[in-house]
Length: 76
Picture 1 (tube, rainbow, N blue to C red):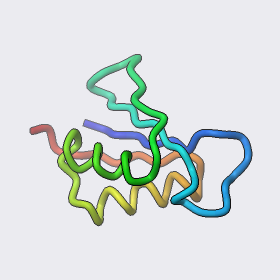
Picture 2: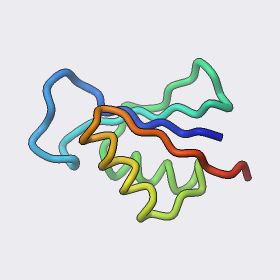
Picture 3: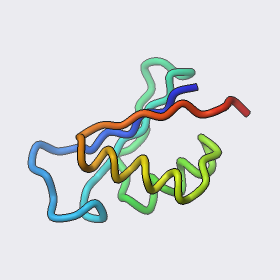
Picture 4: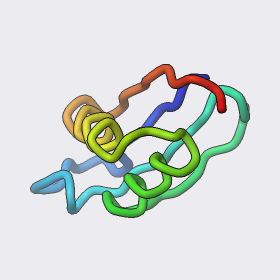
């Protein structure tokens, strides 16, 4: 399964904690979850994608830097 995190908004906020993010899963086409804060996104990724908090944080920070980031995660 591939999970994608996207930073929302046209203007980049001062920091990753100030941004809003959406999450999509390739296993659920057409569904977008969010927009959520950094903390809500991290918590969702640790539960729904079974990512470790460090992995979730890295994915969110990549999305903040590049507007969007994806990772392949094993299906539960």
